[in-house]
Image 1 (cartoon, rainbow, N blue to C red):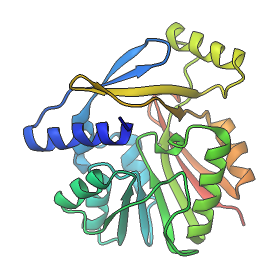
Image 2: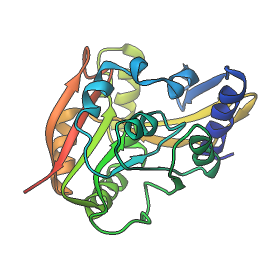
Image 3: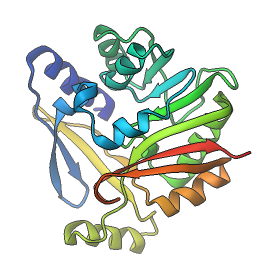
Image 4: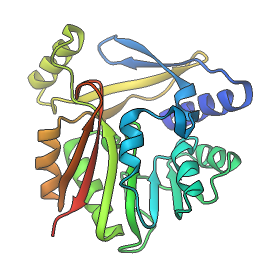
Length: 242
């Protein structure tokens, strides 16, 4: 089962019932619980790094990997023009059901159905910065976002640095290096109501690594916003290099 459809199942279940059990499994056996309620938070409930990062949003906005549309709804209320996209038609439909005016289907890891310079800001929250999974696919995504953004284009994103302090995660990173994978390339799958999705890679990025990768695709870091430490998560603002 596609992980996007399993995720859609969980989001719709929470929307209709107020609860959903969604779990994340890593390929080394590590398991965690995903808080589905987080995808339905209001502006007041946003993480501090999200609140601060959203202040950089301007112009016409693409909410990429919109999920239930929580960020699009807030930006609409601010009077900004927003197009929300998600790879799952059912997730895009959920965003529309919750009030997002323009929610469409698009794959962030492929050719996007938008014109050159169409947007001023692209939002990639919830680890969507690394959703394409590998360094090469991440660079392709950055180049495609460079194409569809204006000369004053910005990317506002959240991610987290691979953990080198937690022993459980540190051993996983060591195995990545042994296998020739990127340090923060994490292979995971979702589990919901007895069903398991297909394995997929999520790329976690340290700020210094992000700076180097982004520069090769025509972007530079304008701001980094961390709440506690980079391993717990941080927001970054990328701007087109002049």
